[in-house]
Length: 407
Ligand code: PMP
Image (cartoon, rainbow, N blue to C red; front, side):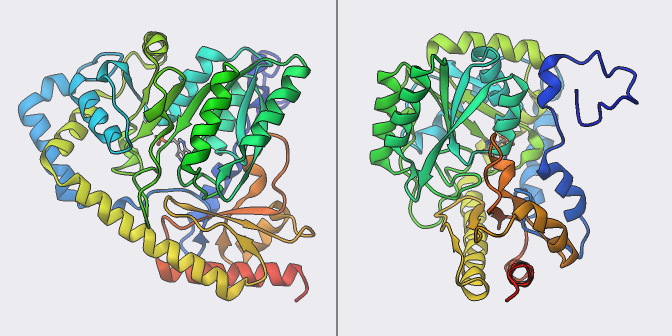
């Protein structure tokens, strides 16, 4: 049954059990509100694609149509084109990953890779370990496959290894089946923190010794502001890690092109799942991206994105310091998000309508938990609004928060 599945729906009794978890995400409901121009939206995580020079992309599109039109417009391989998969290997080499392009499967954004991996591994009632909090879009997929999510605590260095050990022991003593650990090691969405190198190794060790697969989701890794992110977990473990990457944040999400680098044993099943879901990933998008990577200064363009997001991060941290000095928040070294913690007496979801009345939107923390936590947290995105708007938005948020606290 969906949110829309009321008794007025003649098909109400026909929906599959797995649709019970389907509901409009809090993020989706917010997109409608946040699109009003007078609202400063610190809610959605939309990349600032206007910073991508149009000629850079148009040149690639024209060349594809001139040189390879019929192939780019045709169905392609369920694994993705060899040329793009080779480029993807070079991109991942920047994070220490070596290996064969034969183990890369191109998908419709990394979101679809999340869906395919979950489809391959999860029976209803299986457990997925995930950070506390975790990415709302992944939680939606996990719910759709009737997985139970066990959140594992984080601190400023990311997932806490001892908490992971304790959670695994508790679940095992309850006879539960744990299938994989889902982690976002770099510039976490929504927490904004980065998993330290020492912890990456420790967590891999814990998962290896417990026979638990790691799903490493890394769409933000190349958007580091201050120093490069630590190397990928996949760089030290080819057999126990499925790595997910994406062109959504380093190029543009409209192409809907992402990928999975799987252990060799898993990759064939992933291709079959990909074929059954979509026949083949977006041919045109793959051809255009290949041309773009061949012909343009795409590394320079990532530097441009980085500079823009760094300035916005700085604006947000400065505004938080100025307007909400008694609260606490994370200080991201990259990516799109800051995680704000409110005093216990405030409920971020209940407060949202009042914030929108003050013309500022955010995502309530509850969106990022499978178990109702997060009432005292807010995810703030700095990727889309200008530094001036961010300042205005945080000032408005402070007015709302201080009003709630009767300051
Ligand atoms: N994982 C994380 C952590 C994300 O933040 C996102 C996008 N918001 C995705 C996966 C999906 O990205 P895409 O499908 O555009 O590659």
